[in-house]
Length: 165
Image (cartoon, rainbow, N blue to C red; front, side, top):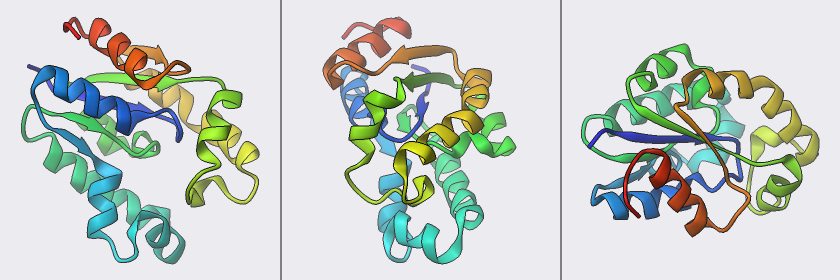
């Protein structure tokens, strides 16, 4: 089984979908943000606020490298694609881009700390989309609309990669 990596903007459900896909494939799920939340002082949000995005991305890259050492389903932080080294690491993997219109994602990102979106989450989300969409497109093998319920999205991912749900 090849490694499967889920990428996409905040609010696309990468973490939840990864769990279901991993269970269906009988492999572990690794959520890079969750790993980093336990590893970094104060968790991801506080770390970004206190130390900046660049040091966070370096930690995220190390976590991705560790995760890709075995058959696994990885849900990445949305910005991992901004690192050229990460894109090189992702290129031989099966990469699935989860995406939905901003009006679907915005209510999802309103919950929780999202420092990279700033105080106006709608503007922040639109800016991230502008900055990252071409990078997601560059590295992804499949693009899945994640507007539906998480179980439906997971089934679409499994179908795309040729696995049975």
